[in-house]
Picture 1 (cartoon, each protein chain N blue to C red):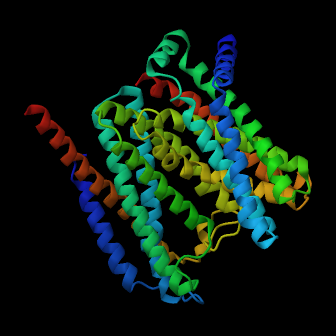
Picture 2 (picture 1 turned 90 degrees about the horizontal axis):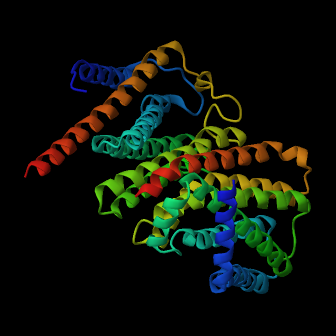
Picture 3 (picture 1 turned 90 degrees about the vertical axis):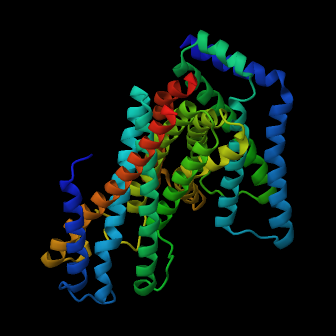
Length: 220
Length: 221
């Protein structure tokens, strides 16, 4: 437990020292939202509810892939070897997942805030929408962290990352769009228990698998 | 693997499927009419694909546990043949859909699931192509194979049941009774499933043997 906490703290401190990477991620979200604002809202001055929702999730998906890709490549191979001797691989993956989860929550909420400022807030049940954001952040961070671990071993990390992660994220993304659509229609929590259960189930499976599979990745 | 009887069984059952699938009696259903015979060829493709994917998964797990190179070869070749079966199922399905649903590619969760499945296994081969080192390639692709399979399963088995689908047996329980098959059809349908799975395993085993022999030759040079 202490090990995990220290590893998360280490990641946060590292992020804080190289602020350009973090600022880059924030700017990525903001400029993507602004692009959508210019191409949708300014041109036609109206956007359909479904397009609004899907567009938001696509933005979140791309910023997630973009920001989690670097979780294993920002540190040199030599330093990774050093961690390998200090910590258990299972605590390294858990620390990375938790750290990426916090990062995704931050980026997701920031993105949602900016998105609703520019494109208007169409979510009637705001809390359910935010819950779907949290569940999405958990699922994205868990599956993308392991895929980032796989992709970081190759020379073409960024390209491989997109190819490997998009098909894996599709089930969770389609469920998230469904859940957030319920939130937009202002349905109560009780009517979307099914979706919440399925998404949490997928999240759990993904976390458990990352936990079990990462030690094999770490060795190579 | 080198036993021969199941190859005779596979060919016999396949011949039986083709002959009785085409001349056997089928119930007259509205819209479906004679196209219901496609059930002997389209549906077993999915069973074959699932069986091959599960074999590929098993060998990937085995590779991670024991680290023997041949298990990796098994996993790859089963995945290869699974893709072929997936594409064949896709083609037979869109032909069938063209004449019964009026659209070769209607909006349907199962079709989307299969497209995603094919994407996942294509990504698996892209991943394999991007490493030089054999051990690294084998280990990383085995990890991805297990991970991808686990996130593919909800897409195939859970999501279609939560939404409406044109396919029978969705939005509830996946009963085969809904195919409206009579006992005549079942007599062909069940052997057809077995036959296609066996053919898939047969193709895969031939490819595995070629590859293992190749590896063996290269080691001895």
